[in-house]
Amino acid sequence: MLAPFAFATVAWNAALAYAAVAPRPRLSRAAACALSPAVCVAYLLLAQLALGGGACFGGDGGVADDDAEAAATVPCALFAALFAQSLVQLGVAGAATRRRRAAPKAAWPCAGVQALTLAYYGLERGGLACAARAAPLGAGLPAVATRPLHLCLWVCSVSAQVLALYCVERDVAEGLGKRARAAAAAVPDGPARRACVAALCCVQAMCWASFAGDHVPGAARAGPAASCAAFYGLLRWGVAAPLGRARAAAEGAGDGALAGRIAHMRTFFVAAWHLFPAVWFAGALGLVSEARVRLGFVGCDVLAKFLPAAIYVSLAVDP
Image (cartoon, rainbow, N blue to C red; front, top):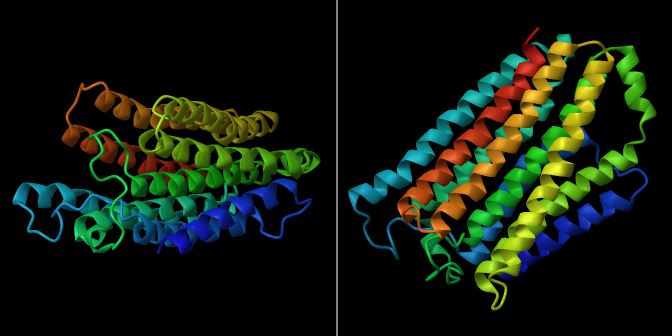
């Protein structure tokens, strides 16, 4: 089952290359945001079938002990509840779009991210990882070696959040009034689109360089170094660039409250995304156990994937 996953990966990167060079891509930002949840979930399922890299709490078809089963069940229940709450928030935001502060469509990729993360932990909890015929590429690795399926989860979830941030940029400008809309229209879409593509490419480089550091001989140092460089490129083009322009649009329209909220949003994303490498380094240095590394990643998932949807909805409904 490796061929469909490899084809999907090549098609994903080919679409990024097309978006970077095309004068006017046929897929709008709104359409990309709407499609991203379904695309990401399908990609994750292909990755599971191809790589078999999920951690199966029950072992190779064995019976799990109660503690392991509980540890695998809690993230599923948590993200199911968070996903349901996000759907309610999106419904509330949809009823408040007349305010036009920021359209709630930017929150849909975040709800998709929660559904995607629920699917990941569901694969882990349900033992479907054990049903994959391919031997897990992560088998036998140290506790801190990130499994391929988790890397695919990050590729999908971070990419969807980058798309959401670029939707926030455009939606804020369009919702501030004629002056801000005119200023936004005067800025060519090409540079912003290429910056978005650069951020999405950084996501790919960050995750697959980490994979290379774990699995490719001789890349134990170069892989993490390249992944770290791509991570800061992601923060530059995926967070600072769109939110910086959105804040400038709000300030130009005299909306200081919205500008301050966007500045806080930028601080949140920078801080929350730094937690993932911090947890990894804590495990790599032997400061915490394997179980605490896993618990740390679950906590990071909750913080980085639940709060953004609430933040975007607040832009749509808060006065």
